[in-house]
Image: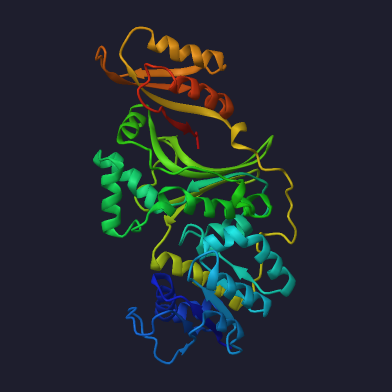
Length: 427
């Protein structure tokens, strides 16, 4: 018997799902054990050309009406947004006992705990492989493939727009604003890119991964979030001299003080598998006690990769495979979130200082008072009386101590601009 599907949202992803189900119908049917067919849709504009034939499909003006369509076996939500019609449709479908497949990371990150409880109560599956890292099957890998492991860390490059910008800044030696404009021209960045470049998109995805990895309710508010607006071409070049590349990473780890979850620019060694991930590609790294380190890499967005993930979830539904939303019926980890001030790590710090006697002694004195030791120092050129860059790399120290030291360093009359500080991660 055919699995009859309704799709809410016919943008790039929704149209991609329709196209993929038709193009690979025989393969999908064989793997699902029965045909999977779109029979109903909902979108704002009926007349828009989406590059896929919609003849013969039922059209619902109100997407929430899909939840009440008795001829549907499952609903696909690809409208986006944490509130409004997307949330209303998913809640109504689950309440009606109708399985939902969604690509909506904002919805899952914001309301995942409540939606998981609703799914558990009604028995309707909530599948969201497409919500994280596009076509990379990271949800299934962590929730099912690594189910026998205690995971200590999950981390990754979770936003293709930021990775493209940082890659082009390094390869071309261009400033952030120039590369951002080019990314917008090519369609890699939105007209308003803040959701991506301020780290919010990556944070949504990391919140989901952290919930999966540590068997705890999804909690977006517990994340520390920084974007890439202040990463300069100079810092990228200096990172290269030191043997690092700068990446925007999402990192969730189990520490002695609790579970840490953070999104921010990082320097990673050039030999790290994440350092080699370039352009719009995503990558996710997981570490388990039995399996060790696993790295998954691929395209994190776009019609094909995201549709691939949606269809994978539909195949599971067709086969009757239903895993609890977070991999377990009840939360397994009650460790508190660890505040960012408790983070321990090494730091890259670039100062623009007046080239005059005593400057370095002032800076190192402040670091000494904060019990922060130096691993290395790099100074380029001499320009007496003018500003020159000085790079300091620290040994491991607590974030709280580094923050206090930075406040004192920034106040020095010889420091002419806000210090650039990037955390170092040896992934």
